[in-house]
Image (cartoon, rainbow over all chains, first blue to last red; front, side, top):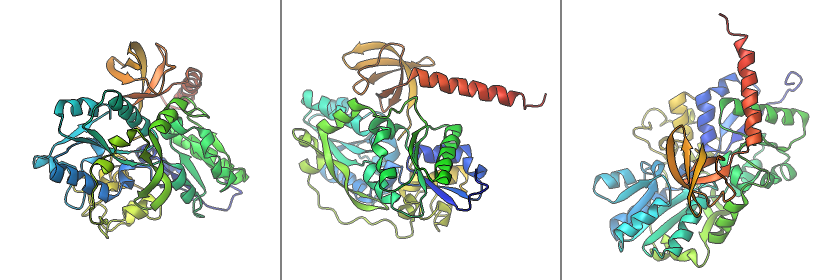
Length: 340
Length: 79
């Protein structure tokens, strides 16, 4: 099918777990010269700006708050070290697997304020919505959430307008929540194909094949190759939970800047859980190390091996930027599996 | 963050909460996002929550495909 096609194709994946699956399966080495695969902003830890870490550190160090976080945030550098560093000098930082665990921790530590670090995309957001609703019902007055939730459609529209990108490998579990039907604009407005893929090496290959076919035929569409889990309409229960607790807000993404409507803010009566409202902070700007190319890597403009720090000063044991720290970061994937 | 695994619902332990099992490993999870789940359904679990019920028909199609693939490649493997 490619024999008569002269052009090149560049597909982007926007899911951190796809980043890892693609690199661990070695699928890139199988692609012919015309097809390239680039990683996008699929890792919630990586797109969360440094200021968030600084805010968390401020809450803990200046206000005596106990921080609760997902594990992959703990080694991300802030302006003055990471949460792991904070913990090793006695700061109260607890790692949880489920946001619901925050409730028991808050009850045990009451009246000390407890702040859950709220990062994540649409797969995680409903889990925090349920946590907030439960905390509300149980009147857990000392639990707060520092919000940095991000939603995929607005940044995806910005990426889709990039003429260098031919199509998209769409996320697996985010799509389970938002539904395949929600990606219609990729075709209607940008004439680019998208395929929802699973996480097996074969799933990735099959999805790539669909993307190539649609590109060569000039008939872009949205396909679902992960039907075991992803429905056309998505998970209506999860979306209702999100809508009950949150409303769209602006959010700032490393690599993409401020994007209107790409984040979430609390809706009344749940705004009492907003840590930013309860603990207003005025912190100085927190720019990334100027040598760190994470922002450009997140938009597929550069690859990790084009960053001067990669594998030298910036390694998983001693990361400079979040793309190397996070278990789903592009730099971490390249380092571990050898990028192409 | 997309990391989620399929586990079988073995017990409803309370309103909106269930026990799931994968190879003998058991966990308690919230069913808030999958209230339609019934015992013996396979659920995709993420951060202590069932985020979706696995579609059995699609899962069978997938398993059949893998079986077909295994049979096809078995013939290629030299003895």
